[in-house]
Structures are given as C-alpha cells and as structure tokens.
Amino acid sequence: MCPRIALALILLFGNATDVAAQSAPALLAPGVISTGDDEWGFTMTAEGNTVYFNKSDRGYKLQTIVESTRARGSWGTPRVASFSGRYRDIDPALSPDGRMLVFASNRPRESGGETRKDFDLWAVDRLVDGRWSAPRHLGDKVNSAGSETNSSIATDGTLYFAGTTAPAGKRDLYRARRSVDGYGMREKLPAPISTDDDDSNHFIAPDQSYLL
Image (tube, rainbow, N blue to C red; front, side, top):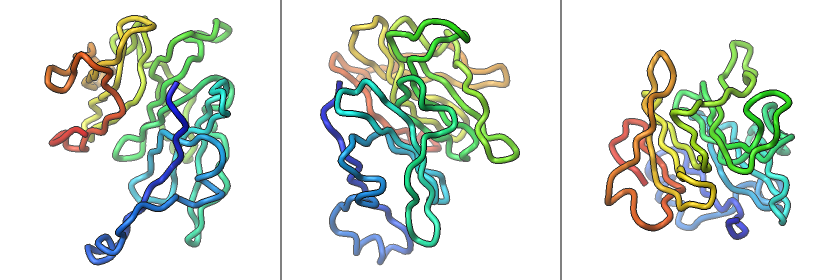
C-alpha cells in the first residue's frame, strides 16, 4: 500500500497576479480536510466549492470516500459520500461537467456477493435533485481479473485509468472510449506512456491535449 499521504494542495483562484502571489504550497483547510488521518485521491467540482477525497486508517483496512463543501470561505467537516462507507472505496474522479464520478472499489458485483480481493471501477451519476445515483459497475470491457484504479475523465467521457492483468501484476495506463452503449474495450496506452515500470496516478486534460 502507498506510504502516508496528506493533502498538501494550493487552490488557485482569481487572476494571474493572484496566482503568481501563491509562491509555496499550503495545506488545504488544516484540521478540517488535512488532518492526522491519511488523505489522498482528491477531485474537485469545476466551480471549486465541493471536493471528494479518500480518508483511511493507518492500516488501510478502511478506505472511504468523503466530501466537503465550501461555504462563506470555509470548508465544512468532511462527511462520508452517499455511495461509500461500507467497502474499500478509493480514487474518486469527477467528469469535467460534474455529472459523473468514477471510483475504484472492492465491493461485490452483485448484491449479496463476496467482497472482491481486487479493485474494479464503478460510477455514480448526478441525479436531477442533486443526489448521486446508486453505483454501477463499469463492466468487463473496462474491468479485468486484476485491479483498476486511478481514473481521470475527458470531456467526451473517455476514461483513462491504471489497470493490471493479474491481481499481483504491475499497473499500466489504459483508456476506454464512451459511446451511447457504455464504454468500449479498454486500450493499453502505447510506449513511452506505458512502460515496464508501474504506471499510475495520472491526469488527462479535459480536451486530451496532454496527460500528466
């Protein structure tokens, strides 16, 4: 499992002068979002007033997606997201329009099934009343017998993620294109993007012009 990570993020709002003035990273909302727990897997709505991220105990037995909303300049106490809290849920990623959130989970595919040993990708959709839908599994064209994690979503819905071909295998970067029928078969990104090393923790630009 990854070493301890805290959210050490700088939020840049305003004009270029304001951005230039931010010369050093700073903890995001110390004591509220950045705490003594492990926090990682950060994603934010386009308007910058709601964040989703992971919190975990030090043994990583419990991994939960939480959300916090900013009001009147202050971030609220994180609360467990409506679709999380029972299984190991990690790596939330919002689509650019905020209407879909993809995450990795070890939850069973069918109700009443056994908890999985690997992570699959799931999605929730924003409903008309602002709530999230029930989680839906992204299917076997995206998921495999190994783990799928670290999603990033382009404006057209193309999903970029880290995946393995076996439970203990190294991770490579993949993408799956979205259509009206759902996601198509995943494609491994070619070299030099995918390498012989472990590839993950990436970000795709909304227009797919660059990948970090």
